[in-house]
Image 1 (cartoon, rainbow, N blue to C red):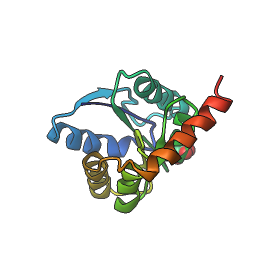
Image 2 (image 1 turned 45 degrees about the horizontal axis):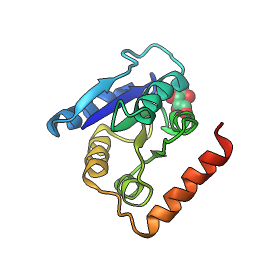
Image 3 (image 1 turned 90 degrees about the vertical axis):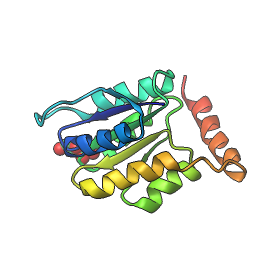
Image 4 (image 1 turned 30 degrees about the vertical axis):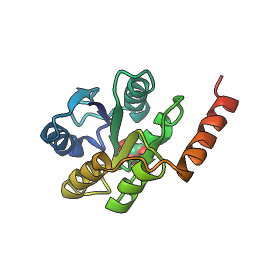
Length: 149
Ligand code: RB5
C-alpha cells in the first residue's frame, strides 16, 4: 500500500506522527510537502495528493491543514476523491466504513498528535462495509459524472 501525504503550515505539526503510523504499518509514503512552517497555500498540497490518488499513483491520501477543512474542500474538487475531514475516532472510522473515504483530512490546530495517530490507525484498519453504502457512494460518483467535465 502506498499513501500520499500533504500539508500546509497549519497541519505540518501532525505530519511526523502521521508518517510514523504509516511506517509502523509498512506503508510506502509519498510526501508531497510542505516541509517547514513557512506560510503556503493549502490548495497546492491538496491538489498534489488528490491527483496522486485520483490517478492511482497512491492508494489513499492523508492531508493536513489548520482545521482540515480548506485542504479537504480543495481535494474534493478532484474527480474520484472522497476526502473526509475528521476530528475524532468515530468519524475517522465511519468515513472508511460508510463513505469509503480515500483521503483522510485532519487539522493541526484541532486534534492532538496522539489523537491524530489513533485516527490514522483506525482509518487504515477499517474496511468499507459495502452493501447499502455502495449505492450511496455510487450516487456521489453520479454527481461527479454530472458536473465534472
Ligand atoms: C492557514 O492559516 C489556514 O487557513 C489553513 O491551514 C486551514 O486551516 C484552512 O482551512
